Image 1 (cartoon, rainbow, N blue to C red):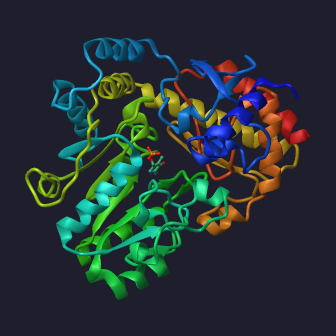
Image 2: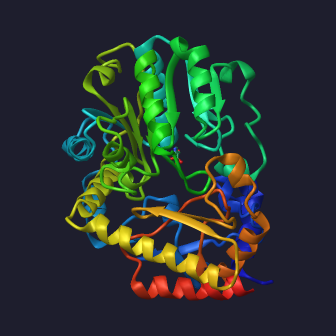
Length: 430
Ligand SMILES: *Cc1c(COP(=O)(O)O)cnc(C)c1O
């Protein structure tokens, strides 16, 4: 096929490993040629062949307003014209920190960094420094970026490639990382009984979006919070995906509604708070955050941290999504999509289950929603891959692996949703 995407992919593979700068982009899980994106606007992407797609990846989450939102573009252009980077503090960093804190009551101070990986890695170091302990618990299928200590049974790209853990991570580096099954209370109790006093922290995706879409059950989260408090371990919520995406206050605001007094000790943000630019953050109560240099003994730094253009982009994005009714409208639209997809599958007798929260959704070719990674792996991967390609051929761009959540933006219109459901009806039929 003399397709320009194919030509670009071949050229890319000569100079970039696998032709991509992040593995899942390569379409290895679903097969076929990745689309090289030429431009994007609103809910749409255009590939190198100028084919248009309705975009449900949204750069893996950040593009909650859709692509090219005018207020965001203007803020970015204005910031860029004033200077790309200073390596010195700016007022906009204060404003972004204030905007995050205003929406997340568990966070009194934040530090801005450049990627979710960096934020989660720094949060772990902070937890270890603050507690003077080494061990941590993470859950199978949860991804917290690719810092060595967290790169164990981490879902997403790793799941796609069938590596439980990356090569290049010595056993010594992950000897303090305990991996448990998500939503498994008995394992959690046992791990605390055995290691509770050595645990610096437990890190969890409250709604796991790197094994598609799996919620931490409320009793599980409640008990996790109790155990952390009882044993003096810090609870780290990785809200890189869910923060400012499932609700303005993140997934923690939803758990706080179900569990009186619930709050994490450390929160990790990324994706939406950068609005499409490289920006992430971690935050906690003041006494924890003041363990960081220059005040405390835990070192953490970054040449481009709080970059003025990225900060302007994030701030403009947060201002838009904080408008009254924004999340109600986004949630209702996402719910309509998920319900219509489920109905279309049911009509055609396809085993299908789906869930959503705010502007994030997931679906499985399985009768029931999986509760942990093993169950996600047991869902019908071949069906997903065929569905993915059938949708792509009909101009709908879903994440190219079944281990990934999907995202709806404010720019998706009712017509886009209807076109997506119509395409899915045909795809289910085929
Ligand atoms: C995307 C993601 C990360 C990593 O963020 P990067 O910016 O890709 O480094 C960490 N945790 C979660 C939950 C994520 O979804």
